Image 1 (cartoon, rainbow, N blue to C red):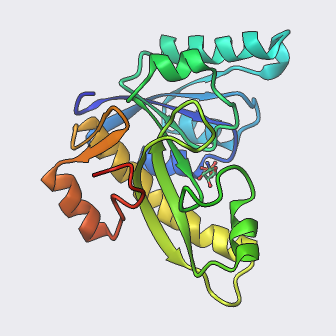
Image 2: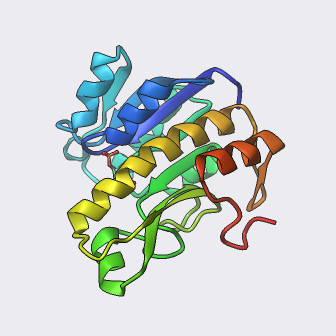
Length: 220
Ligand code: GRF
């Protein structure tokens, strides 16, 4: 990782987190955006910001395995210091996760380990939880199971619908993710084995922003 280094962002959709990462670009730059969906809105946002884009469409490959190898090839060619998943719907192959171990992060719209997978806002409301939010974590071979870096918590309101809750969580995603990318790039957040380490600066800034660290027991 190096301060001012290059981040490749993988998307599949509208790209609002990508947009937040582009707008922040402090201590890092977005070098490349890769999408498996040719019509992903985030591609336009990247192009407007003058960022190189690559589309790796599933339809161009004869098998899932060759498609996933194509995604890995595109990411390797972009030569990133860090890979940030932002609404990327491709389940990455083990080779990918190995190649970028400690340099591959994802944002998920729930307070993991609660509600991994899809439809998190509906499930949070059905479960009747009083708090919900988002998590940024390192990616491992499981679905939303990697070491947790930090979370932003929002209150669930009695009148919330999945849409209103999702909008509030999304706003918190847009402040959490750029900060984490900046602090991973500056090595104020690091991964040792499955333990996430924070510098005093990262801990202090997390407190100031109201982000939660050390919630899972995976961290000391
Ligand atoms: C976000 O809610 C993110 O947490 C999840 O997928 C959604 C992507 O939204 N992984 P956007 O494309 O960044 O707007």
